[in-house]
Length: 184
Image 1 (tube, rainbow, N blue to C red):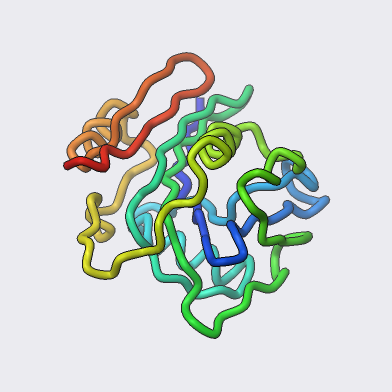
Image 2 (image 1 turned 120 degrees about the vertical axis):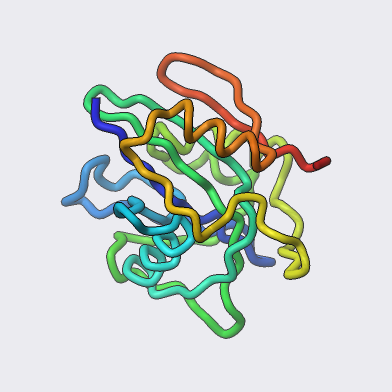
């Protein structure tokens, strides 16, 4: 089965978290998701995320740590998502360039939107825990953003790399959920 490695942004501000709606001509038409996209071979996850955010919503962000790692198996492919906590660079505004719609939303309101299946564990965590604290520029990244991750690499190796960075997982089958160890 084909595996897709994705970098997505948990983009937060005082207005909440930014979510985007897929276009009608895309797979999973008009469903909502956290913005981001595929990591190209040889591209670091953070560079892929910044590229995708500029292409889709014209937004430059400050990228923080990985806040969540998700795995989901669809019928014809599996997706591994690295979700980075991000904040818009001051003065930047998101626009609908390659998305149908976008909205700033409070965590308690996320369940009102029809999200792609792979994002649902993230929504559950946000509803349960709320938004992460604002980014602290003095904190070092736990996963080296310059180290490219290969989507063809066995999932076990990607999981080992994530564990070295303080990411711990649980689950099996169609979906797995990983949490960040904040005490390291």
